[in-house]
Amino acid sequence: MSGRDRISGLPESLLTQILSYLPTEQSVQTSVLSKRWENLYLSVPGLDLDCSSIPYYADEMLLSFLTFIDKLLEFSPELSLLKVKIKCRNTMIDGFKDRIGTMIDRGIQHLDVMSSTDYYEDTLRDILPVVDFMPMNLLTSKTLVYLKLSSSGLRDPGFVSMPCLRFLHLEQVKWLVHIEKLVSGCPELEELTLVRDLDDEYARRHEEFMAMRVRSKSLKKFRVPLKHRWDCSSEVRSMHT
Image (cartoon, rainbow, N blue to C red; front, side, top):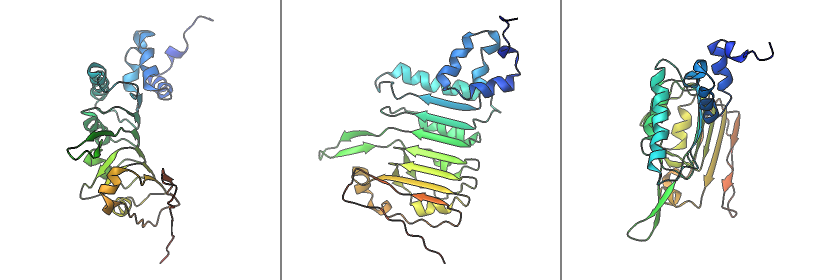
């Protein structure tokens, strides 16, 4: 009895639940255990990938990253990816935004993305950022409860509506949408964290988005720490009418 594989005898729903607690790379490794485990990782309702170590010039590795996400999305079209965490620090991936958009359409509830900001020198020798903007349907998600973005970009979709969002953490995000408009479209928002880098060249070029006014009846916690600017301070005023 000591050599019996009791874990493989568990229901598939329980096995995929167990795999959901592992980083996706480790979850995929279980596919070699036996025929029973071969495709189990594709049914896990979560994704936890770290591609920060992939060199920006490694085209084959970047393509494999996107191919894996496509395989995951195509294997069970009815499966909702409830929780997605992807780290792409130091790596710009063409087509990555489109995959995030597909995940949002599939009813994602928890999204944590660390993007990368690349830089180039223009004809005037100014150092300008290349921003990894999130898909436009992000700010109209009907299912997101938790959203954390780092070094990503947000454009104004014209209409913001995230009726289920309760937690929002934006760190060094490149803004092309007013925070007041963003928060007003989140009627259930309870916790908001805005981490801004006031020394960022992108912020200087889009000063109209630097002044941030927040109005919310649901907000319980609001944090505005600053980065890399020791001669500045942040202030949060609470106004009741």
